Image 1 (cartoon, rainbow, N blue to C red):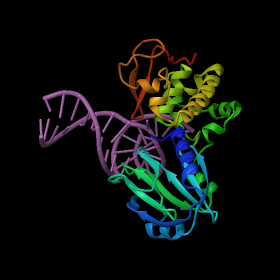
Image 2 (cartoon, helix red, strand yellow):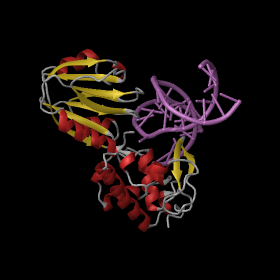
Image 3 (cartoon, rainbow, N blue to C red):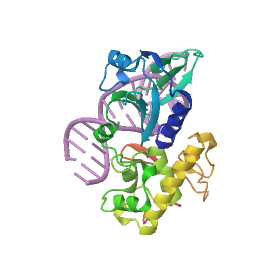
Image 4 (tube, chains in turn yellow, purple, blue):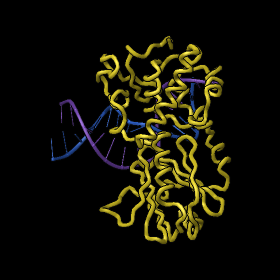
Length: 264
DNA sequence: AGTACCACCTGACGGC
DNA sequence: TGCCGTCAGGTGGTAC
């Protein structure tokens, strides 16, 4: 699930729920998701503190504590946040749960344990340690053109390279390429100037629209490829067949009729 | 520099 | 029904 739009939705969710509340206790249900800190230490550092702000870069989210330190979240493929007072039923995938003095809890939920949480003093150093490039939504056309300039491989791996541009994953890279009419295997160097511009504009459009629709696939336009990710499905634009191919082991969906390798 | 593959995890689904 | 392989939107490390 979590690419840039999803993480942005989580960030706004935390802003709307768990800010400015004093932490009473922290339950680390699975220390395996922690990085760089033990469960005991995390607990000690959070108790009595509160979350005062949030920031996001790509798929990473940080929550600023009232002592200047940062709680870090990465959601992996199945992570999300949930704020609640009374647990409804079994909560077997909660990995870390913070409890506040008001009786509410914020759970870091992660079915597959591919997500990560940590605590750092320096946000910039954290981003650097993960080799994160600029956030996809912080770029202007000139930045984007500069990043593509001199890039060697195919365009899809470039869009997904977090050290180049942070935030775009498998799903949204396919969507951006589809809307721009560019084949995912097109070498970046072969993209016409006009195609690079289209990619930039579609990137912004897709990410912003997805955030607006809460990154909920059910609310995303039926004209998008996203809602037709199935081999043999009808392309919403031309009625041709959507195909699934593999690019470095990841499923890639495209409409071969709409997406040309020449980059047009 | 860029790509492919594996590992890390759990669960859903289709075929037999 | 049970078993098996495959697939799923994440990253990090290694090998080429």
